[in-house]
Amino acid sequence: RLGNAPGGVYAIASSIIRCTWNLKPPRNNFFLPTLIPDNRPEVIKEYFTFLVEGLTSSYNKLQQSFPEWIEEFSFHEEAVLATELKSLKIRISEIQKRRSVLSRFKSILTASGDELAASVHKIFVHGFGIAVDTKDELREDFKLLDKTGKPVCLCEVKGTNRGVKREYINQTDSHRERSAFDEKFPALLIINTHIKNARSVSEKDQEIANEQINHAVKMNVLIIRTIDLLGLLRMYLSHKLTLKEVLDLVTNNSGWLRVSGDECVVVTNHSPEGKA
Image 1 (cartoon, helix red, strand yellow):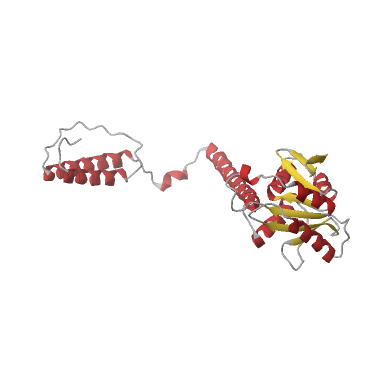
Image 2 (spheres, helix red, strand yellow):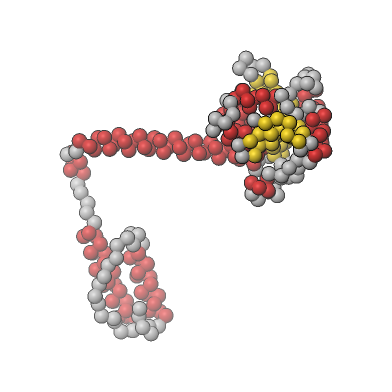
């Protein structure tokens, strides 16, 4: 403290202290017995100048630096430690890359248009390991393929700031017909709902209206929201569902495939029809 020193003195002292502070994070404390100077600006400036010079000189003396040649001598455990450190760095890099992949999967919760379609493709290919055929004229239309390359399910991807509409279900059915499949061929409507107005996962997780579920059952279309698709992927990655069970769910049902926690339920008029 500087007693009743004028504002200009405080400014001088503060600027000098900030310069010292920036030399190194303040991990060490220095205790210096000293007399408090009088309040004349020139005395205050001189006081803190000598103080800073003393602090920096003492600090530099405490820092030990060694010549590079001493590393020519090594302890036996250093090689082991170096190998272990290298392995840890590799593992850290792998973890960071995997976390990045999972974050990209979750981006479907906010994506729309071509970005949404591309993200859904990646989830099936890189998440589930299911091949897809994206040769349709529209990027939002694609097919899931079995190991022989045969189509097993037709998929329609939609993004909306609201909920599921009847027209989306009809478009999925029309796409199936346009692709020369009959009405019994599995059709999946993957829809990202409430894109802009959802501010949390709970706000994203809004139920599908009964009338849309009934219409989906009638048209033999299975609705799965993006949050349901992520839930399905989470169950698969944690070995709670096999790939066969995933494919059975999306190819043998109609209505709404709802995923909540570690439970999958095929909903028809809000009445569970199947469970995995």
